[in-house]
Length: 257
Image (tube, rainbow, N blue to C red):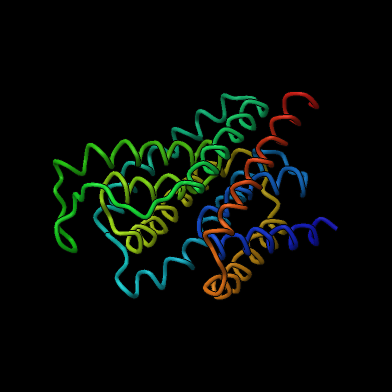
């Protein structure tokens, strides 16, 4: 029965990933904790596997068409990967209730970002396709990379809801390139986060395979269907769903446990 539940939950998360991009992964941990009934310390590494796999699949077509700013991705990865281990170390010191409350706060932040209009761009720090004004870029990208890495290790989230606004609004990267670059960064951070969490709790690999496998497959299908849908309206409604789930997590954690 657990495997069937994992398949269904993975399919839903995968569909959200395909339709909405990386933001859909914000519900992976709540699905694993409240639907499949895993401990949050088991849910985080499984969530990171799903995020890494789905982001890698999504990044491939972006790489083929050149929609990745590799040097910026390198900055975020070099700062974010060590930070994931810091986030994991912090999570080991916190009780499960504190992690869940913190995760609910991150969900609210993600929902707010989904409701914002990110069409504009900030002051560009890139010069041409590969050149970077390091004096302007580094002070902006390094703190963002550190924050995303810590959140990845602490809560098992990909951080796309922070990476894309940082690339677009803080660094002036065009949206198509920001999306592709974000996916590459998410893969690197998620793999590092998974490695840092391996020893935390026993991972049920049958549940992991069922959840991650269906998530990747359905994300590919939903990604093709998403081109025909009003994704702006869909993302707005998904943000409201994220707020509702965050409220449930808070009520369950504070009042019912």
